[in-house]
Amino acid sequence: MKKADARERFFEREMQIRTAGRDAASEDAHRLPYEPTPYAVLEKLADSGWIGPDNLLVDMGCGKGRVSLFLSRVTGCRSIGVDFNPDMIAAAEENLASVKGNVRASFAVRCAERYEPPADADRFYFFNPFSAEILRSALSRITGSWYDAPRRILLFFYYPSDEYIDLLNGSGALIPAGAIDCSDLFPGDRRETILCFELPG
Figure 1: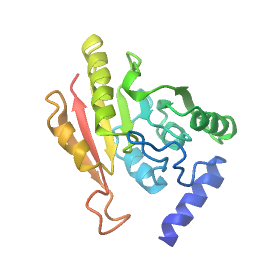
Figure 2: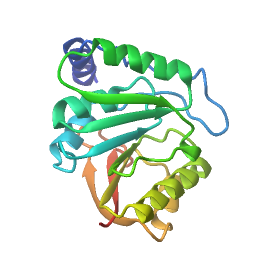
Figure 3: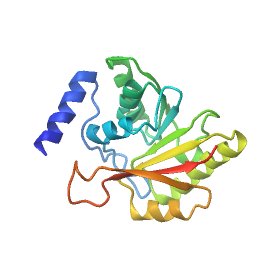
Figure 4: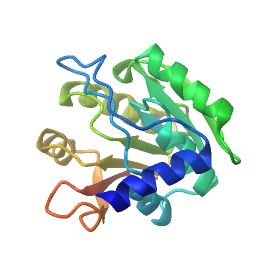
């Protein structure tokens, strides 16, 4: 754990952003507390080859912007962070203003269930930000965008809940595309993985 904590502090200092800590201020029956994805997990995703400079990544439930800023900086992708909480987006904007390094990122106050993805958005990231009911609506919007503008879309789900997995496997349109094992980072937890699903181009 100490090694993981040191990694967290290193990247916060190195990127000159503040995204650490858990925040349950906006938690309710459908929205889960803010908790950032560990940097070590994001490093694995960045190293996977699934995200590059030609991609547009949407972080659904972005909180303070860690995923968007880190992955844009490391992979060169464009990124959009979406969150329903204006306070979180304000914090993300502050981090965007102070971040060290070349990033192509923006943030928007939007409810995931009503968010219309850009026609060129082809990567989506989720870290259990909301209930399965909201996820179902968000996936419907993403699938609708895919029908309107066919392209290969990859969706990443870190630490997926059983409800998420059941919904994803039963969606019909989504195809399992692989997984990134993160159990070496946090041993003893079967959910320490990033599941990838695909809408084929």
